[in-house]
Image 1 (spheres, rainbow, N blue to C red):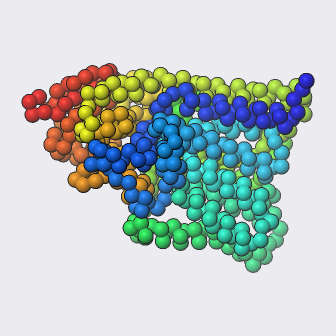
Image 2: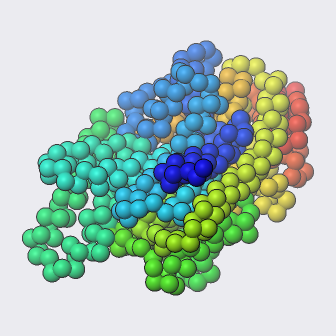
Image 3: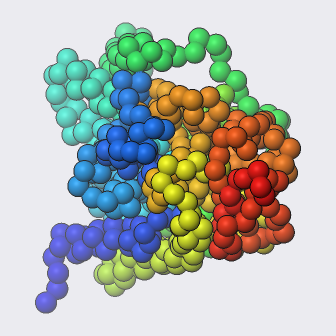
Length: 528
């Protein structure tokens, strides 16, 4: 008995969704860079911050927030229903699945058909920006994609009803993350430009183009006014200064062919470059084959929008003021827009029509299993931190530090591409496991509803910062971390992580309490 096409598609979709999110199901604490910090904040938001001794250090103030709060609001609700580790994994799973799911559904909407290739887009479920822990950014991309789908479904709605709805959607996207509004704007412009760029090609009048531009952009302007008002009410009005654009190796280096080639791979970088290249090739090979046969289905408006993000990612700055990995964010947005813009040819061979969807399931599953295996191996590091923290009493103050990362000697999974070590925020787990104070929780006014109480807010790192090395600690290097100059008077313990990749000595004025390999705990005492 053969399955109907509709049932076959549902089974394939269910299998791909499960396999794409498989890494989250395989581990208790996913070893992503920012994830432990986020998970601890989720737990505090669910009520833990109001309990002793944590209420001495932290406070919850939703009034200080303006953007980036969608994830926290969701987690605060889930935190009343599930333990912290489950809440964090639910939010992370949504961060991984929503953008590719939105891309697939938008592709179906604009091309008018399902394709065996569309589930391949779930290879994009774990881009490098998400492996660094940019969960809110990913959630905003997914929200923007689903808003664009809704726009397409309701494009015959009366203009002013559409304006009100889309303004509300823009506000919702910005509340999740401002970058999502950029994606939504690009999608709106791409969809308004049409599948064949008809509004731009067919001798449009200036009046007609002006009306199209106003109706497309007006919701974003109204939403911007609402967001600025919200910032003012929160006491966090935007900085009037011009933001600093930073090219880490200089602007001209971004034009080098080697840099461009590396950046084209970077969005899908993870733990092993050859494996990453294989999965990228498998994703684009059907597109390239359809181009060669001149049978690629293209939505030209979305293609131009995706090309715009691609150019911004290749030649734009790496950082804008304190916002990091800007180029990588643009390239990630380009992947999703281009994934919706193109669709390979229909397969007419019946045997291939059966085999190819099964091959897609196998490919997506292979990447999910591979990444899940790496995450499982890194649970040893998390267990090491938990064991090292066991002697810490509730209410103690723990200073984090680390041996400098070595991407040559690091076990697989500790290092992400050539960007950053993936373990810097593991010391945040001291708050969850031991109800202790750590000075690196995300607590930025305007972004997170978590704040640090006085006097602990005087030298904490509300953006997480970079952990000091043994040399930084020994020299009280305040440039490395704000809490270092007076650390002997302000902390009870020092937690050193990544301690098993080199030779480490006890920080001056501390005694070793326990050595758990990856993590070591030292007690701060004048007697040491």
